[in-house]
Length: 218
Image (cartoon, rainbow, N blue to C red):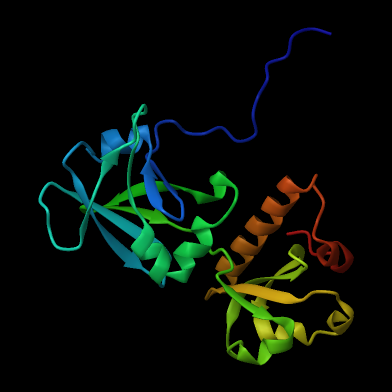
């Protein structure tokens, strides 16, 4: 058999500025450092758009109120700044920062006037016990997942409380419900599909057990 060119299904774009979020810091990649003109002495002011799950980064040279120092990461061409405050105060950011897969914590930066903006993913920031579902707002719609002893057994979309009462689900084995509120069916479908795809990527192309039973293969 002759030589064949190896190809990857997903190749990182090394020309795109990115930021990686952790529970303690924002890390700015090499391209971001260049395009955002980050260097020693620079500071950053954070802006948040909670409704659209966006974080903005405004890089400045003055030590302004509510600005944070940007540090070079030793031995690399990347920089970082603290994320403690935003992670502590914004559950939708914290849920992303705690994701185990770095690919799910890496976001493109796009310039919006003088602010570099990162569009975060919804990451199931709300969590309730199955026995406490009355605490879920009756009009809460978005994406959700059921977990049983920490294992994801179903990923879905729609009205979180109404879906619980669908025929047959009372027999399902799960102890927690995790969800993110999203408006618009298109967005809900987009992110339901995203998280089902991520689950399959991490689980040998298999679906959560009740997705497989229900035939939900988004």
